[in-house]
Image (cartoon, rainbow, N blue to C red; front, side):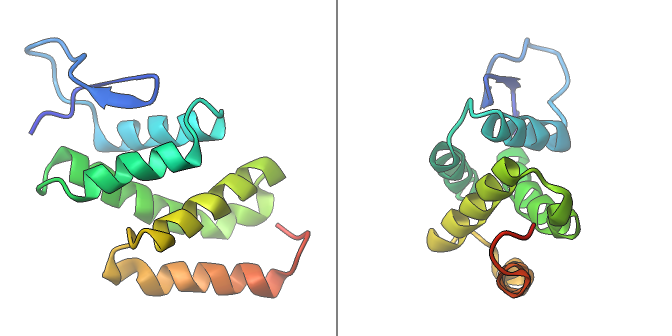
Length: 125
């Protein structure tokens, strides 16, 4: 499966024939960057990932899984996030859970992330 290129946070067929596929990590990073720079809303990104989650196992599905895993792995750095990024990340995780887009194998980690945030209290990163 071809992932294509990334333009304005969108994966598409901008890739020229014969060029290698975009690396999954680079695509995931570009999509997160679009959200954090407010070029793509949280709702739009979650919608994109919902589509990716339904794709057969291939590049798009790998991007979806990588994004969920990397967001959960970032938990140990949340205390250092600027408040704007922390709020976007919390909204992103909440919407992913609301749409049942957190894979079952990662659900316990997502719930630990929420419990840690609740224990930290309001106003803390």
